[in-house]
Length: 279
Image (cartoon, rainbow, N blue to C red; front, side):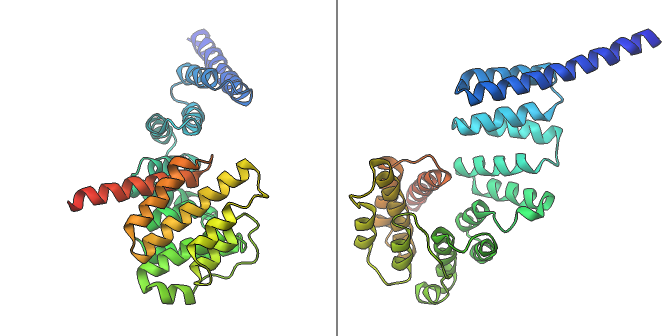
């Protein structure tokens, strides 16, 4: 009996070492840009110990980056089944649920994340955006006010605060309550800020985004943000047609590698879905 227990202990230790090694290998492959191989090796790590949540979290994170949203959520589901107090898994799954257009599920995950890790609250701008699309505008406004503790130079935070306030109190009161911004160096963010404050026109935002001094990559990024926030601006003013036109322009013609691109895409999908239901 003692001999059997000894071999069982040795086998268990070997298994753990094997899983750790495979997880390390998967990360190395990922850093080298060998993404398919990285996912494959992460799968082997999972197979080596199906009760180890780390493998599912790692593979889910890789699938998240590869825009395999359904598969990523499935991995995070399994991770949380094994490790229900994993705040990172809730955060990642909440992000993926938003990208799938599942707003209620996204918010539930972000809220659970903060129950486990309250210190993430002030900087959780993703939760603020989810709150906006969930129609929880007062809570969203408070979320963006909390972000002021993290950064007072982010025009986007002031804009989303404005959007929540406008839904609650109207455009005029939202302008009066706009958050103060220092200096956001990203073109054309200061023009966006002045648009929402009522100081500039939409064309001023587009002109700044098309600045010839910008590189092609910088101009594409500037035009993405210009059309994104013009779309949201027209949505706030009640012009759904122009809102969809600008959001479609942002999502289809000026793609960037950032969560905000998914926001533009999801906004289009939600607006089209709402239009279909209203027919």
